[in-house]
Image 1: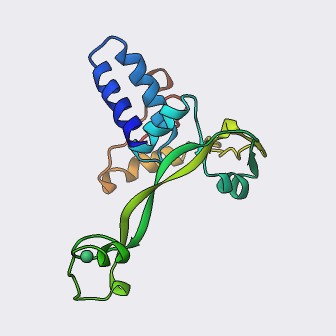
Image 2: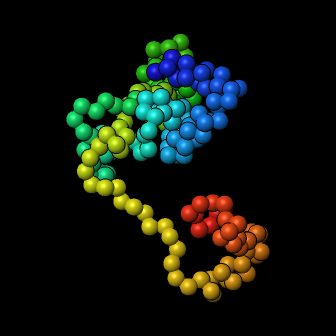
Image 3: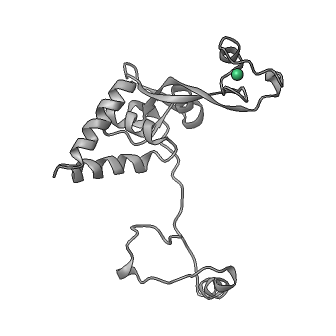
Length: 182
Ligand SMILES: [Zn+2]
């Protein structure tokens, strides 16, 4: 996986100098925007393996959180998941690795070490298109109602909060379907 990643990254860097870069980059940004919960490395891994992926989750997560089932015969997208364990304050390894290494730290017992990321392991995830079942819940984010009193209150409160609030007319709005930006 590491080699594939490095290879893709090298290719990607090369392409930034070419005219093809803008489209490639735009596509990548589109993918990136779909995976805000994933590291940049995992986002790239997802893209390498499934260009059209929009929402990915683990097999169990699709079942338990979304009432959806991964379809038979679908092959997994592999990403890296952090391994969290107690870390030796000196060498930074897990207790087992620390004990089997040349590290001689013995000021505090492993049970008192704080937890942290000690490594990564490959885990399988699946894109929503590889699953079937209940549709995903839509989050209602549109604004309703009469804002004639709310808007003046907001504008009045802004300076005391050291915030600059501005009303933007719809013809000058550049943020798509968002009702406001911060
Ligand atoms: Zn150690």
